[in-house]
Image (cartoon, rainbow, N blue to C red; front, top):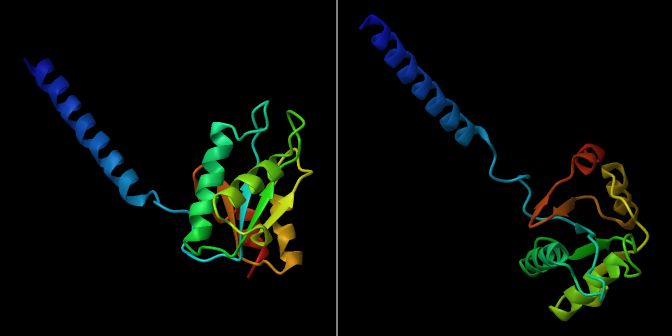
Length: 153
């Protein structure tokens, strides 16, 4: 009987600890990536287009999010970046063409069509174009990249 009590007490303690860990994780994990709500530029990283040159589902998701953020006034410019990494289609151009078709003015988009890999230290280069506050698009969310965050006081 004593053994059963000890086992039950251990199970209750484990359940309480597990609940506490889940609660604390839920309360302390941020639900956003930056406290900023306006940026100079959105940077959208490329992803291979389909073999026929149309956006892949992943690329479509990135385009749609950048267009939503642009139309919401988050940033006046978008840098679409990505070269022909996996086929002959330039990812940045495929994204730009799709964004223009969705109502983003062509002059609001900068196409970088040479990148085949994206490294965070390269993301601070748009500062040379007068862009200081950058939002990096990965998938369906935009975030302030760590490299850009460190580069600006």
